[in-house]
Length: 223
Ligand code: CA
Image 1 (cartoon, rainbow, N blue to C red):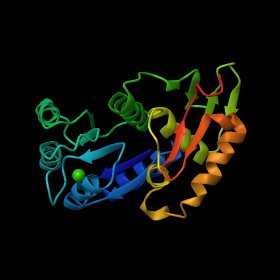
Image 2 (image 1 turned 180 degrees about the vertical axis):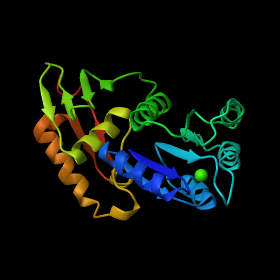
Image 3 (image 1 turned 90 degrees about the vertical axis):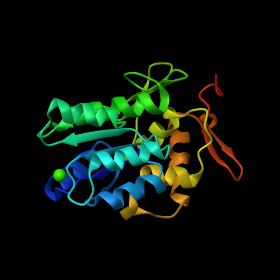
């Protein structure tokens, strides 16, 4: 899943990016409000972490602009003062959640996961589709028969995308965008390699190739 951080405090932003990458998110980071606003209109992020106190444009203005233009990307706002008024303003402007600084990384991760799952798939708690469950803590998939299969970081990132939208056909381009950030763009063919790894581990029939279109996760296919 791909995230955008808009935060002018570079130390905090770097820290966030590192921790979120460890949690298997692809992360783009900007320190400028207007740039971040434009990026979230061009790229389909799974969520945005938005600082309200930006020097070149208010986070609230950015958020209001997105919502006015119909951009419904899930947004967590970070507020330095964390007063109730600011929180109310943030929610009114269309934020999905908020966190006051300083905060614990674990809390941000939990809230992030909750808004992404809520906004993208309406599931609560663990991602589960067709008897397959994603175990985020152990980086595993639990199969319908209860067997756990360990995944590499990239396999895990892909699997999470598939399970979040199982009915959808995912093109290689979309999958690339979801698992890599701007700094690590590489050849589309790596997607094929990772999908083949997943097929070997979980079953060939689970990942259908639709010619010229992409891939679909079909957990019912082997049953
Ligand atoms: Ca700030």
